[in-house]
Image 1 (cartoon, one colour):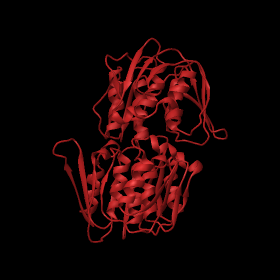
Image 2: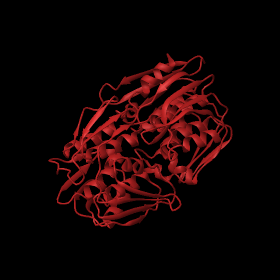
Image 3: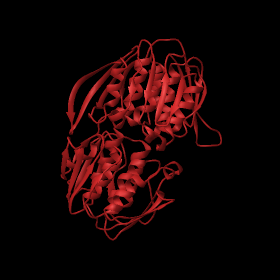
Image 4: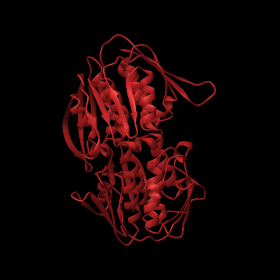
Length: 446
């Protein structure tokens, strides 16, 4: 179908990805996906807090889980070298995190920083300082700082809610937090703070967010209560966690790029093996089915408490749809690649209620609007979303990922189906969540 090459910038650490589509022959083959990023983070954290050993298989080897592992090593947990076969974690027990000798660095990982804050704030008599890279230091942390402060946490921040952060651990008080947004990071942060807090800590959301924390906390031995009708989750503290064996399924957020690639490319058929299909994460499947994508779920089973399936996608004629409301928390990370699908769909796709994307690794709404427009797509940026009229042929262009992994991969999929050569600057960002994305792309086109 074409060629894919990646070149290192001669004077910087940045990489440029060049994609040149060729003769049509279709994307064909089976793809083994990286481990789910959300589950990888949580397995490392809970393993570090548990009594005994935790074995993690299928861990994502991206930069974000490495940041989590490094932070918890600095606080006393023994974590073996990260690999996808088996990572061993020797936990130190809840409430036993060591006061680190240096600043904890979450790198580019918002999940690391936000979830970890709940744990640090509830560690009595210990002081922690937390920072991240330039991108993470520009992302607001008040969404977790404020509820933690309601529990009695002592957290100081820069400019009213930005890292670096200083945390003086203390015993907290349980609360019932009515979250203004549906966010798994907010919910998980508060539940983790509740592990050491005597009593019941409750989080109620306006819509259901991903529930990996609740599932894994229960598997490690915490007392977790879930009320689907009220969209609430609670943890009863103080808890005791016990080491477990964890199998991390393939990341559906990574699968999303190939699902869209297979749907929009001619003569395509791809099989994505062992993908996590947790119902709080399958909004991408609901929307693509609504857009007339030919996707089937095969070999459905449960693996370590998480539903898993193989996904088969074939070339399709996509049609426009509206993506908004309660769907958004179930596919927030997949909106950039859904914007690409919309550019190839018949009609006008409307994406609303997604203002949260403006405070991710980049302003994903603005970046996808400008970058797709440079390829010839008809895109209008909305305050909380995008309006995309599909069907206009896309052409190659010089693009920029803005160091955002999901932007880099989304633009690469768009480039596969454009005429002419596309270059994507700062393409190394893809490795944050999908280290093998470019090699997989090259293999499919070889």
